[in-house]
Image (cartoon, rainbow over all chains, first blue to last red; front, top):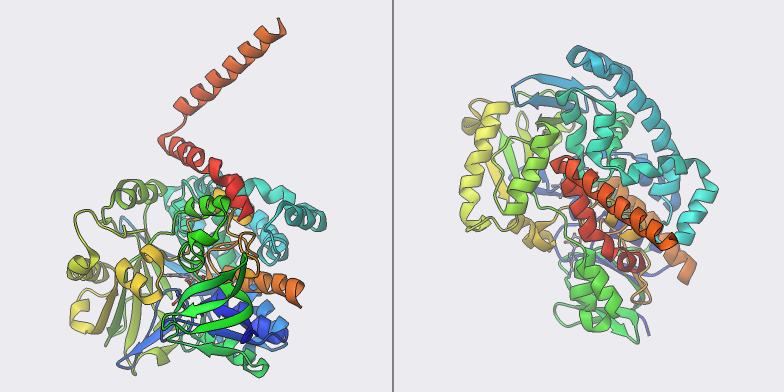
Length: 501
Length: 48
Ligand SMILES: Cc1cc2nc3c(=O)[nH]c(=O)nc-3n(C[C@H](O)[C@H](O)[C@H](O)COP(=O)(O)OP(=O)(O)OC[C@H]3O[C@@H](n4cnc5c(N)ncnc54)[C@H](O)[C@@H]3O)c2cc1C
């Protein structure tokens, strides 16, 4: 006799959106989360009156979130208050130049005209083509199951115009950027987003070249911190009996006769269910929770072939002064070659990059309630990967050194006397991140993303290796990101409804 | 005769691919190598 219809492992955005939609569809559902907080990478912790976002700092492309609420039969505005952030970015170039991209496309044209008149035409072509593509691809690719050739063919039959955009999946991010822009500063300002998908511009899929454009549909910060997104979904699903248990670590998925029939917790408790949903990194799901002895050989070969996504150290700072910034996000950026160099000559060789490619998030600009009155919060991350295992060293030993190096950067770009204004500070190294979320090697986007690990080639939402096992979140199609993992909840729950409804 | 033409065509194709590879930028070569390492796994990845 099953205790639940659905057991969802992990309360990240994928787990919560899948769990909420399962509950809405009448399945008795529980979400089990090992940490004391919900939200995983999209979460917020509190310390001494300051609220720090653990990972994600913004949401763009809000359609998947709206779709989750629509399917729950609720109004998003009643649960999550989204504050628009404009400008999208303020940039600081290697040579100290500063400029910003406003949300408005025409206003951005004026900015580009000032820096690189030769790229205005490219920007117009990029935005015209890109906006049309984003509109066409939203439902077709982002919110539809795309786990098999028949599903892909059905999607194309329904939306024949998407074929036009297929080559973008096959091109690299840098090829798309270089097709439209000549000026290295402009190229850098639309290429660094390849690291938002976890790959350098020379390896990332060209489809992510359009992240730089989708941001012009608006970027938003949820009042109360990023945790307000998962919390809002849980609140909206509470009417349907969704149960969420924190501090509950799942040790194994119980497999009987090739079927997932429940989970075993860290304390040995067994819980039975009709089906199991995993929001964990797919390598962890299959290799640690299901375990190799329960997998067919082909599945073992498939799952072992994926690399986990890059890690990225973060610094959380509370300040008693206003930082000298003018946007929610400030990006210290470089050239495309510099971005590739960090990957090839630092990250892949186990060396911590000593290069200024940072993303400085200033959430108290959008929501002053995140800090005591007159104080501010900065979440500072190196927008380039840092190795999980730095050569000859260990992150626990070099944490203090790393903090000082990060403070030097903040001093340079944010406040010259920043050290005098810091009231509180935490450092999260790749090791800390791994300990907090049990994310292997501190990877921040599940699995590495490129054209060979997307769509049909990313672990499927409905497992073919283990019956009644479903996957959701950043290890599934379309990878890491707030909108993509919310979309994965829509997709995974649609399979579940088909199979068990 | 047909066999010879086929062999010549095959050789020309390989030579062309090699020439294209060696005249490509460092970055493109890294991309090609990366794809070369990943492609053999695609049939397995499709299944899982
Ligand atoms: C530093 C950083 C910055 C980012 N910035 C942005 C951004 O600005 N915008 C954006 O769109 N995206 C951003 N992202 C990406 C986005 O936050 C993530 O892709 C997304 O939130 C991941 O959701 P998920 O569903 O994959 O679950 P995850 O967030 O990976 O959550 C998985 C959950 O499972 C739990 N868990 C693990 N093991 C177990 C176990 N054995 N038993 C029970 N529970 C377990 C973990 O504790 C965790 O809560 C960022 C991510 C990071 C890390």
